[in-house]
Amino acid sequence: MNIETRFGGRREKNIEVFDSTLRDGAQGEGISFSIDDKLNIVKALDYVGVDYIEAGNPGSNPKDLEFFEKIDQSKMHRAKLVAFGSTCRKETMPESDENCASLLSAGTDVVAIFGKCWDLHVTDIIKTSLSENLRMIYDTVKFFKDSGKTVIFDAEHYFDGFKHNPDYAKSALNSAVEAGADRIVLCETNGGCLPDEVESITAETCTAFPNSVVGIHCHNDSGCAAANTMAAVKAGARHIQGTYLGYGERCGNANLSTVMPNLQIKQDYCCVPVKNLERFTRTARWISEIANQSLFKGMPYVGGSAFSHKAGMHIDAVAKESISFEHISPESVGNERRFLMSEVAGRGTVLKKISKIAPELTKNSPEIAEICARVKQLEYEGYSFEAAEASFELLVKKVLGIKKNFFTLNYFKTIVEPEENAFSASAIIKITVGDKTEITAAEGNGPVHALDNALRRVLEGFYPQLGDVHLTDYKVRVLEPQQATGAKVRVLIESADESGSWTTVGVSADVIAASWIALVESVEYKLMKEE
Image (cartoon, rainbow, N blue to C red; front, side, top):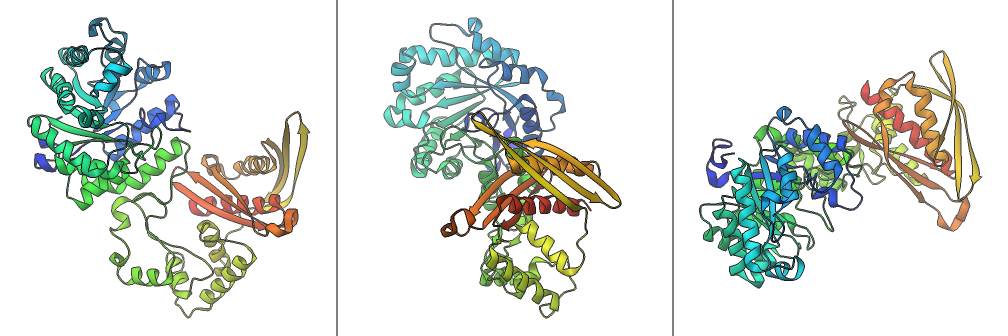
């Protein structure tokens, strides 16, 4: 890919984006991608517009090998798939190295090869000579170039190596460049460097290799991966690596959903086509769902709280002039502004929050006063609408008389029976929809799970759209600890489908009853949203 002409702009303002969610991200704690997960993440990353998708090491495990066999690269619109692996082993030629052979078998046009750039790793970790390591780098890069591949050389531990022995670190890069590497990527593998170090070392390296496209790959062990990536770009790097949501080993990798808008919106670089900026938030939700991870609400740009306002003065200011408390327009990255509801909210906050539901209301409308009164009473009883906006929307529609009754509960019963080292649970539910009554039962890992399964089972016959809804989080908080087992509890349930997530709340002295309230509202919100 010609970096100068990607968007028809100047070379110095074009940035290549290389995503490693499927390889580096998969090394994060709690992350495990199936083959179908990996195929879907490729679609998501291609949709958002990255240049390269590093899809794993076909020589490391059967799953990655099967993925490369299944992926249809011809259906990818923009991104190029990358197979990842190491240089050949010491005292071995690439032609006879199993890892190199597996990289060729992946069938990608691009390969990423990592090699040692810290003399400590060469002598103490892989136990070979400094000259043999340079030979391994040169021969491996040349082998893949002779095979017609685009080669990205990942200079592992480059910054630690540079600080310890700069001449050797640059010699390792030089071996890759002389062998024909298309990109040389400086890897801050330990994640401990600070931005001023990254900027100065990257600048010196760019000066030493003026004819090469230099890249940056940062880990987040000092909390500086995004800042370090931007510092490297400032110093001359034109290829950035990371993972879309910052997933990765230990503290993770540079978060591309943060770095890309920082560079493109704030500093006028070109990372993705301009129209794709509006896809950032949807892509973040998409990938987090596939990874079965809750999207951190406080994540810049794409998090649910990124453009949320609670303080009355802030809300008033944003309503008058959004830039007073928002650094960019939320719509520019596909997110949305949120006014958080709580017992301290005034009529103005309520009015702004429900403007899409009832634009005809004013501050003096009696409905606004009633909504405020209901919110204050319910929050006094233990509800929290700040964290459960779906429940608040249902409350508003009930006050306005426009909440539809989708079904009526006749009764439910949960049964918990002890088993060896565990408890089994089942639930029976009888509901009425229109003039039809149905009864069903289901089992689960506990009474709430059994209730959820039974409710969905009985309702999906009437509302098939519930089939794509699943629970993503379940929280219980004891509101009156001094009351011990007689205390009220607040249950928050987060649900999600392909278009996003929503949270509902229930409060009761009975945890099952509180869970039932939140479960029902979760279903009602989905059905209301579909209508």
